Length: 241
Image (cartoon, rainbow, N blue to C red; front, side, top):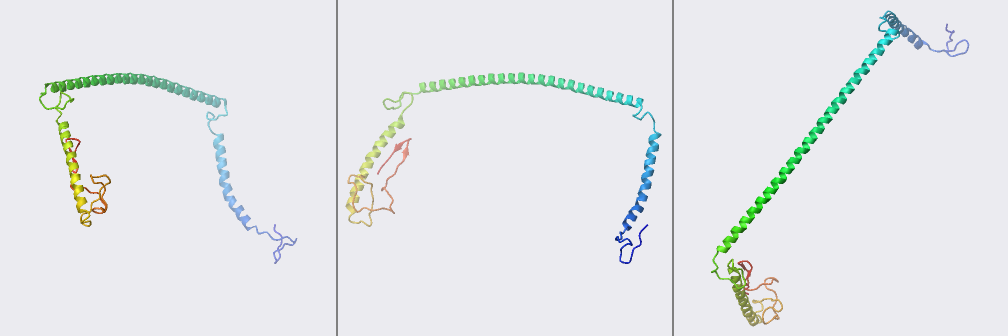
């Protein structure tokens, strides 16, 4: 048992005291755990020894049954694989047939589209030819009594060219006359009333050329008195100043 312990906590042999209260608690608890474990093991042994020999795999009959089951499983797997292969082959054949049908259909559609395009082109060409023929007939049926310039086409009257020529020449004549008058007025009255009548011209404009003492007009902006440009009958330029 335990050695006698002195009041200072040292044994008679000189060793220090060890507190074994925790160890005693563990031992007391293990008793309650060992009893159910032993009972469970006993039950398992009894059931195992008294079980049916047919289920045991240690006997020859049990070993044979195991082999038969394995063989059956293998056969089933082989059958399943064969079925899958057959299904795959059938699917492949179906896919090939579908692809062939699709290609044939696409080829037919392309041919039909090409034929339709050719037909449309032919109809468009025919319509254009008919329109040109109608236009030629209209031109040939027109009267040649209208005035034309020499060298113009005999099919259509050429009045706009005539009007452009007449008004263009008239505009140039009036423009030169206006520039002469304007130069004369500015040269006469520009020196007398320089504050009231200021006008700047580009060099070489007018017959009198640049005039000294002529500064800016309306805040340094170039301006012609009464000058205007207008387009009449497509390209007619009237410069009256």
